[in-house]
Length: 270
Image 1 (spheres, helix red, strand yellow):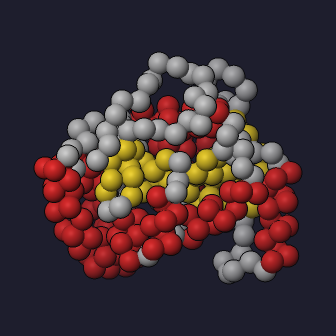
Image 2 (cartoon, rainbow, N blue to C red):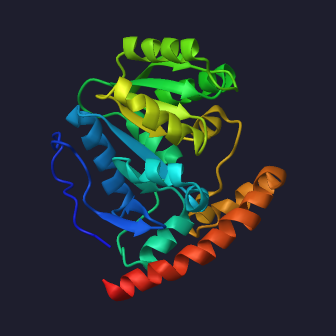
């Protein structure tokens, strides 16, 4: 495990802006700093102008990556992977990362739009539906003037033809985004980001899963108390038992049990 400090003092771009504080969980390097550290790291990466790939990994990411070498490689090659989920934080602490905190994709995206000095970030959205994007964009713009959505694409729920792919990339490039938010869900969004990032190498691509659903009001977040105790998954299970039941019980829980011993061993040997 490599855990080192990440400077919070500078607001200036930090060169390549690659965070150094990471902890390896299930072969994936997860950012091991606080939630504030993670936000600052994301902003540093964006301000650097060198582009990057950011993943917001919950336990299901790790469960899928155990059996999917391509997803494992996509996450490992990301500029930054943050812990989006308390089980990931618990695993990080088992591995010795004492400062690791959760930063949900919903919160990370919200922080990008919060007010701050300087011109607003130019944000493109790829994924989701027009109805959800309309509601989410309105809510995000109310958060502050830190970012503005300048381009939206809602692709069809099927594989794109080569012509459609090229047209989508050209349209994205013409919008000159600082940030591209990809709302396709894991592992599709991580694969698309890995494939498309070279076409817009100075943009920062962030996989955000169902984040826009929460801003659009389609889904509700768990109360703060449940989030603090790591029980947000239980609230979501009650809200969506059919969709999440088999995922949590048959995929995520077994992955947690299998990954935890390796995390403990890492802490003991480092």
